[in-house]
Image 1 (cartoon, helix red, strand yellow):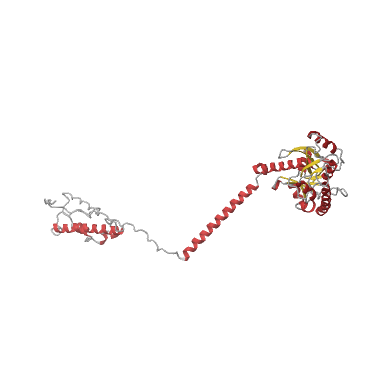
Image 2 (cartoon, rainbow, N blue to C red; image 1 turned 30 degrees about the vertical axis):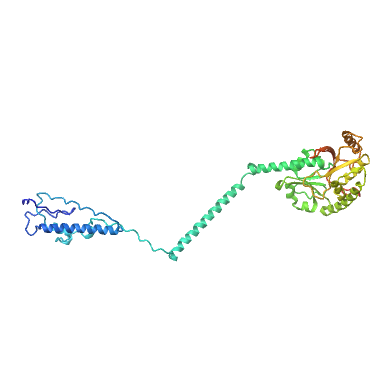
Length: 426
């Protein structure tokens, strides 16, 4: 082996390059490079690396990057021998070896891998018509599917809601309670106010409520699915069940007058006067009776035994007072003086042309020869002897809102028409 020259710096191999064979036994003078050439090679390698780093910086958008320090050259071993020429030329890429032994440029890994280029964005602006059509069609399909889903959900919810048991829902329980309350209130009123000598038509539930309140069963006519209009009755209780049988024709064609009404909306219960001759026949008889009541009322105002304030005086002359009350007043005035306080109708929601069926009399004697208690007893006793056709249904002491005590005299419903002529029922 050749001796190593002191002070001589050995050239280095490119990392990763394999030797093609054992080193030559003795270096030739032509293969030994001068110190100047080695310096030039080093400068070339350094320049090449610096150029690669500069290109990478430009590829990254001009960002300032510090050049990668040159890796230190690994010293050769002392006994490695002189550097072959092919090794040095391999550094410069000018190897004299056959092409088959030289790696292709693509196989040589550059000192710095080029950074991946970002994708190039298309220029801003509307997309071509061909590219917009599939997107628009997709949006329309999506909207359609969403609408179909919403409709399907609503349909399922409606079916589930309609399939619920009405008896189990709180709303149905409240509705049933309201209907029962309206029916009970109407039954109580009919049992107190309607004459026990007239026929009353009602649905099965209403008739049961009337019987429970003491109305005689013999005077009840039960309306069923195949029933016709009950023209043989004097009163019909119109409930939602009865309304479903006859509709609005019952009120417009056969029973136009309302005696009282209870409840509201789907729970409305109406007590009506029904006439066998229909609405036309009823209004004809009502008009004739109104004329008779006007005449009889005006005659009472001329009786010195009767004291009448302005409001009830106008009611007498207008003929709105029940004919039976007019007869009662005339009968009592023949026995002792009386003072009329007011007239009224005990039916809530009654029609305007229904006659007033009660009168309030002052509980004091105008002649001042009887105490109040004795005066009231005298009136009661005398009225109990009156003819049955106009005998009062009730006589009770009532306290008015102003604190005045009155004797309220009532007659039953419905009003009798034609009392002063040929007496007839409604």
